[in-house]
Amino acid sequence: MGETKEERDRARERADQKAAEAAELERSTCAHLSVCSTIMEAMRESWTDERLDDGFDRVDRELRAVRTEMGSFRVETSERFEQVDARFGEVDARFDRMERKMERGFYLVEARASLFEARFGDFEKRFDRFEDSL
Image 1 (spheres, rainbow, N blue to C red):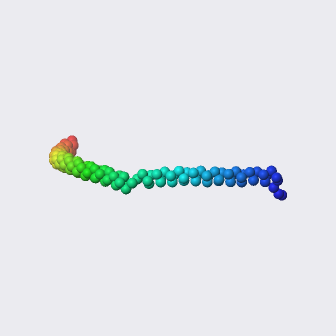
Image 2 (image 1 turned 60 degrees about the horizontal axis):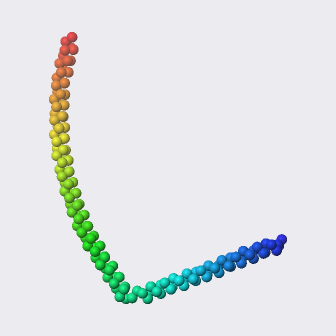
Image 3 (image 1 turned 180 degrees about the vertical axis):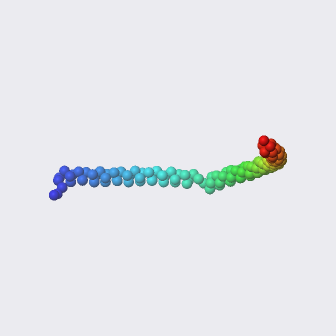
């Protein structure tokens, strides 16, 4: 079966519409490129060698300032870390003292537990003798 006249007309209309859209896109793209090239040309003419040199000199000055600031930041950070290290040294010393105190305390508890165990053993022996005597 062949296409009807209406289907052929609709297909032709769609093709014409696509062709018109493509032509419009091409015109707008050309206009945009023309505007962009005009702007770029104007910028190139306004940026003289002297202006470029001034711009790069300003960038160099700002980079030097940033490097100087970073250097002082590094010094300050280093000093802060040294202070933190010193404080950690103090904390370590405090933990060492606490550990020694705890070791002495545990030793005393162990010694007293041994005495208690010995006394309890004596008491147990006496209780066994008492029990045997009954």
